[in-house]
Image (cartoon, rainbow, N blue to C red):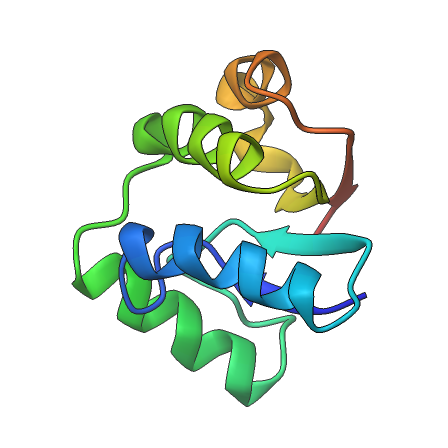
Length: 105
């Protein structure tokens, strides 16, 4: 299951990557939600979160991006998020997410 960070380097590129990953054989993609303090993540994911946030990623944009990913691809997308971000994730599920798991700190 490949992992990509939503919004890295921008949402349009993230959306374009999903059909490419599907064409390469992926059946599901883990779509990370950028976090401003990703200290529990490794350095690669930390940098991808920093880039996404620096380029304007907003959680409010996520549901429409997921809908567009699902429109362009039949691939399933799972989310991961820190528990503190769960308040807006209901919108993500209504956009076509198949699952989500939370990390607590």
